[in-house]
Length: 328
Image (cartoon, rainbow, N blue to C red; front, side, top):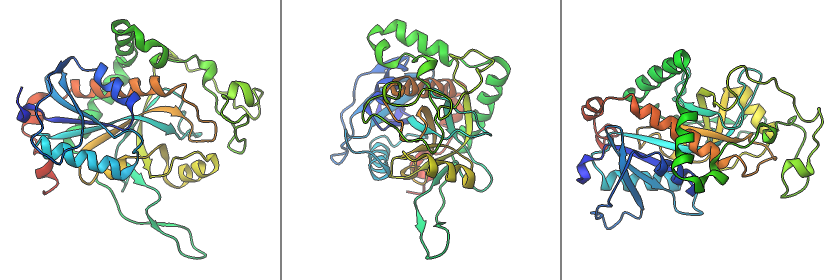
């Protein structure tokens, strides 16, 4: 393979997401020598369907908007033929009466009204005696990806998704991943009242937190297969701050109809034409733990693979390169 053969860039924030992405490749390619002496990224190259993919992960311990922007910039410098991008990984859910978001579900950032799909919620100005005024805006995903989102969403509504099947195949192919990446039981999906904060320090909620209702919220079992994650389309909130405050979460849900919180996408949307795909691993509250991170990462990666599978290679080939799209 040549460097110019790679047309899709895939960015992850943490190692768990990186492992999930690599496991979803249909084929892994040998590494190519790096042309740019200024590119600090470590890549995995491969193929999904007809598309040749470049995968990169943020440096360990360096999370957030600036780090994501730096990784994307280096990727586009070294692989100038990239046309579209994917930001795939885990995020915190924003459940509400309107959106029944549960752990293991997937949120895909897409335009709603005047928003492009990602809302930078801590960018703006604070004026005394006035509400925080958010400033600036972010680009929406490129048309080729928005068209694919519409098609895939319709396919899922008609026939269901292949996400659970993809995950089963991964676990069969690589059994060593089962402990971390298999779906936890529904008993480990706990949503608490917003005013109830985590008890028990670093211990999981099963040990330190109340297991009665209230404060634990009781939710109806889903009618369809509970092992099949639901895909939600809407706005993703992005900032350099990890959201662990259910009261603040609920306020932003009310103000902007947010579905998910994460820490990297705001650094990409205006410089890397991509769609953001997040598997939900917690509820953006004080009850965070790592139990769902592996499964959430692999659900998001499985959705991304399915999305690429419905985009014809010729459609990407006639799309402008990312650097041309961004006017660089």
